[in-house]
Length: 319
Image 1 (tube, rainbow, N blue to C red):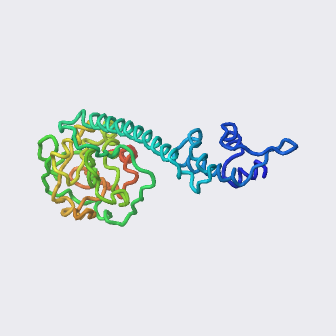
Image 2 (image 1 turned 90 degrees about the vertical axis):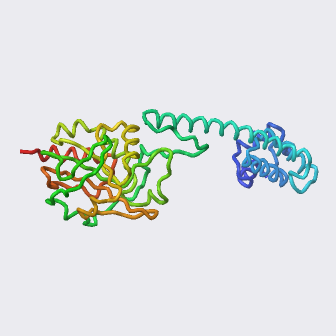
Image 3 (image 1 turned 90 degrees about the horizontal axis):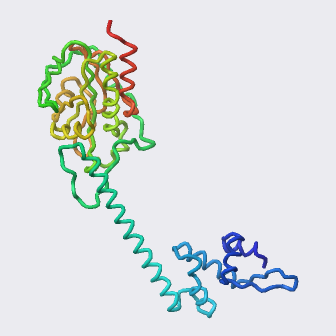
């Protein structure tokens, strides 16, 4: 058979066949006119080279296996030299795995150190735990739909409710002062050393609390210049947890802690359950002079939400 047919039947390119021949791994018969003539043994040899290559054994080291077939053995690894070839490939692979594992551990260590460099909490030392990247939204997150759960909020008075913030102060929601206060409410902020709840990314609107906080951080001065008097983040996580987040993310505003979801009960805010825990759904309140003036719900994508609030402030200046 011609080289093209051999290549087709063996599942390789003609160039590959010529390379195998240059190494002496296959030796076709020459016809009187000088053309190469390949047979079924050549097809078998080339298929074996291809199979060994899929195991990571380079072409140049397939000779013991091919010689085993040429000697009449049914399988290319029926000979001692073939077994030695397997062992050599395994040893090399083990060395590569060990080198990659060491490099991976070093990268994890550097990632931990960088993530906790500006935090009062020490970086954890828990072996090979992989830290999630909360600063980037995964692709194809489900988009939350407006279920009407916040339609009743505009015009309501802020409730008489006291919440602790990360500066050690107690903030009264009905006494935030004159002007506009932005309170962005979110489910939970992830930390690099902790896993998110199972199925978190499949819950519409759940993922992205860190990116949302960073967006409010990056546009904080613009929000104030556009008319906001103050900005707060709020979740059900405790104050110590949120204080670490404020330090690590370098947030220029305080976070409020509402572990019992009292604000949800007072205003009828939407919530959801995951892993047996009830959490706030993501929404933002603009409170002006003790009254809810504007509500953003649902929010997506969260990583640009502060810019959405900023645009609204600029379009609706206080007279």
